[in-house]
Image (cartoon, rainbow, N blue to C red; front, side, top):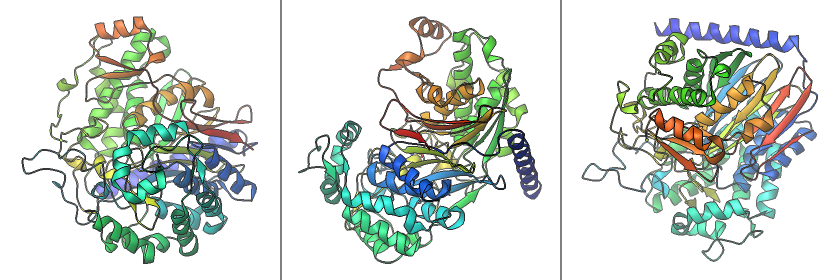
Length: 566
Ligand code: GLY
């Protein structure tokens, strides 16, 4: 049965690729320009530098990943993990590089519970016990070795240079460091790197990271082994263990990137069909995005009044996020009913129970498990002149991750263990609940919401993604609906956002997303709403409009990213 399913999925993937190539060949074969959008101007420039030196999108992705590890310690880094979604123009091959962190071998299901069975607050968030085994160094080296044109050392050079020269503290950095001040102060190596005399540094202060430059140089010289074996690995393990963590050298030497078949779906609307390619488990992104859009494919959203349109989107999100909580986890440890969750008939069933005039309380959805649940993370999008694409979402989870730097490495460790269900039914820092499928086990990858995606219509293609913890997927839903109705890179990143994640049973919204009348009307339909006066997300989009032969790129106006074409 499994073999039949796998064969069916492979056939679907081949048909999808052929359809994509058919669509591509009917329109412009290669983009007139390259485009890059990242969360930091220095990372965008590093990517452009590598493209100008003859690198392809995959080399540029290595350079951007490494540069973000240096200049955006709030979002990602060598101590974190992530997903790189790749499209190779030459043959249409697409794959997801899964560089998600793994739980150390000494991890166990109840490691964050006290003797009373309750979750010990902060244990899966602050300090080295919160850290999974990092995947970003393995992802970068895999990307360079299997897909790049330039050497790994070449693509890492801009980041190594920047780590030594330093980067300027920004207002965003100060805000995030203030939020994580206690965790940073608890790690002397982190405080020395990211604070000034144990306080938040002023804007413009230069953060120099010579030990991180040395670690990047070890990776440049020795590839994967430069991080996962030898002196760097030993310093990481010694540092973690001496501060109460549980890593061992075999945890590092056994770490591997996994190439996975991406999740594919279609959204149908009066504007035509949009194809979606997105992250597979252990990310929940692709499946939850697909379920939401499958449900919405059954409506003509253009024909609805604005309140009903938003109500239907919220109700679709509620049901898709509920499935996330119940079914999703690391596919190497838990059986996920992927075919069922992606099937249009399944979405038909979910849609049939949606009332246009009334919200369904989340408690009424069957099969809810009560037991276990971003503020940060980063995303970049790249398109090169050959048409190769990379959508990458990378993370150390919380801003500045666990706040712990392993002495002598410059590596800031993640707190990705919090993305497991510490106790099935208990919410995590994003308020997400999870089930048995996402319980902690040695070597397992925690469930993620990261959703690097490609969207393709008859007019063109968008490379898209964003940080934002549990809200990542709802942001992708709204951006995808915008692209399907003719939106461009700028409109997608600027859209006012609203979000529902099944539990808590609350609609969060940015001020501009709902008018006062819409709020009142949604309340009448049974929704509970909570306004966010500060925005969320940091979406980065590159769009290749094939019909008009134009490439555009846009960085989210809410934060400090930069987008460019060349
Ligand atoms: N740490 C955020 C995520 O993976 O979804």
